[in-house]
Length: 316
Image (cartoon, one colour):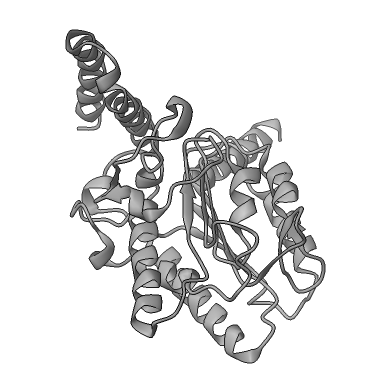
């Protein structure tokens, strides 16, 4: 009996470990308000569902596949149930409307809403890589509340005062698996690339319509809570320096990929995580190149490149 119980427990642990090494995508659709917005929100959610299936990831739908209306409780319960450790990314995609009361920004759900401060608390137990993409109006304050080392945060607006309906979310849903959004032509589209392409399409919309832009997206992945606008990038690299010596945003976001290339799929999760860690360190060192003598730079760079080569060699 003890033998079979041990086998069962081992199987359960193995299943949970495998699950935690796969991406999980929470697609949260908020209270729709007017009917025209509801269709656009559910269309964007459906696009995410298709991408998640293509990525063979786990989808957690909140607010659009159930008639229940206490979405806050369901969202919180789903976060609590999600494995907290592992190599698989956790994506939180918020599609809907937001509000701002001059102190706190909230995402509007069917039932009680939640703030950036509350979401930050709920995410504290997670040791897995986390990305939050808040496509709502007045989402800017979420960036500062959620910013953390190794975490990617995207908001559709740069402040709580941008309260009009945002188009960013629809364009982001289109871009996240689009070959056209593969800016560096590596066979896959990263979160960073989707952010840049979606932002450019938002800018194009307002320009074509001859309207004043009422949304300005930001991305933060260096933990400084400031965020970087899309026009700071050339290709997939930020060309402007972050304040107070922080590394440039974009390095970590470019490592978040849902639909991976065939080459990437061959890498075990642990190898990919180590590769990402080294590439992130190399990127940060590159940002500091002008701040140190050239011999010192190459002295620091060489062992990193050797370690990176060993990682790739171990995967063969």
